[in-house]
Length: 223
Ligand SMILES: [Mg+2]
Image (cartoon, rainbow, N blue to C red):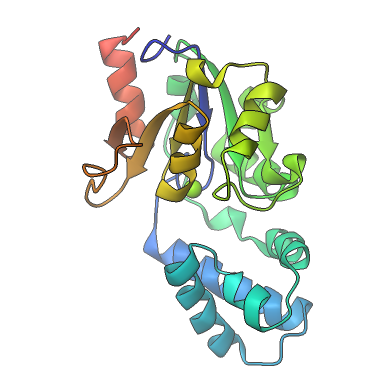
């Protein structure tokens, strides 16, 4: 057990690998290229990229401005963007699998990447063999986001046959953790610069990077 729970569910992007300014910037550019080259948006890649960055800041979703104001379909962008996602540029942590294999809990992944990209990411991180039957995408639940309601967390727990009250959800995004908590899960926030979770009652634990979470639960053998 970890924190008295038998199940841990991890977010994938910027949770099982670190946050990196250059990579975030590259993802914004990739989304802009998808919009212009694949979906026919009539503007320059540079203009689209500025709007993607603005959309992330405003809505925590780089596509939201385009769904609202430019007639872009959420599903089309979701699919086309993940085909272009530059997975090979992700910098993996060293030997993360050695720690994961020692964690005394059933472990799963729930990601907002699609299945195609998440398989590539897991292979790139050296985690595919471990998680191959234990990772799920939002698309497995008929949605594109996991920060819209608690229902998708309840559905996830049903899918893996777990009680939400026996599960920990680990994510770098507050908007996801809020709904995981609403579903009854214990929440772990992964942060990179400053821990800003102090005033948020729906955050149970906060760690600077996933490695510090693993080191803590492995060294303390919290049960
Ligand atoms: Mg994330």
